[in-house]
Length: 361
Image (cartoon, rainbow, N blue to C red; front, side, top):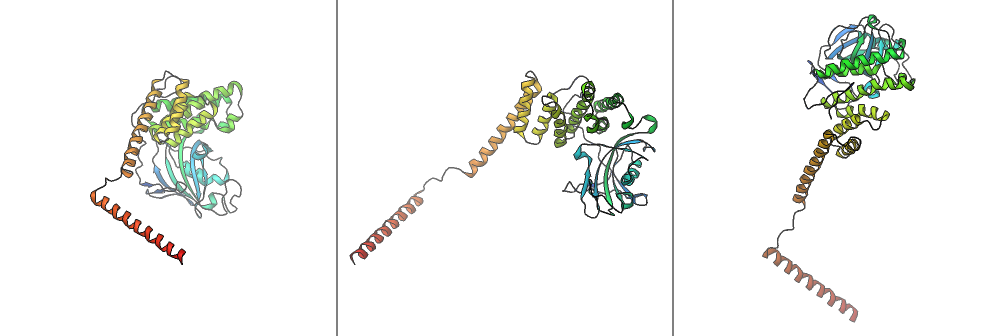
């Protein structure tokens, strides 16, 4: 489905992928474990080391900068993953120099990064949750060394703006909308990774805590920025073939607006790519009911029908081979059947005579 108009993205079939990492990265089969990174290990300070996964661009953030971060965190001793902001769909806002005590090591890590960079960090317990650990959420044992996989989505130095908490509602919505527009511009230039960073920065201004407080016109204003960002993120993720993540972005929009045509269409495409044709067909049929003249959805439904037909034919051929017709009766097979029948007749006659003798006795 082509997107046109304010806050939207045109979809096409051009293949675009993320820039490959210059260092070998081996993701564990268990996604709940940190990746194995082949880049050199650099010591930032005593207790914090760094290995780059993907290079970033530009400068590193200054002190007092507001940084927007996604990260996963593990305890070294047990490899228990105690935090995953992507799974929670919540970007962390970290103001360097104003972080919580337990995030000092993470702040040191982030201060060394460039926008768009991903890296693996090891942080000693003194710069983490300390001697006592944390027995609430997140659950971290005492004196636990930590591993962080961090992505710096972007940042704003202090002179460029203020932390979100100090902004008015209008300022936050305007700041988010500027980043949405920047994301659209990056997407048009086929910079999908950069576009996603801009959308995620925009969504960082529209967190659940903020949206929960809004009502009336302010709620509508915020959704007019927030929902297109989720939809455009879904378009980027489809291009990157990250279909589960695309479905998640569409679900956020559909929770707010169950008849959103763009969200249904993009979720249907992701479902189809994952082979979930029944779910995809349901989404596309709903789009067809809402937009009966849309040619793109008719094309997708035809592709699903063709897929189902090909699958049926493959299964039919397979079962035909497994359960073919019985073999023809040859003369030798007929002879064996006749001999077997004669033997069975003699056995039954013998049993009858034996039974008659017992009765006469």
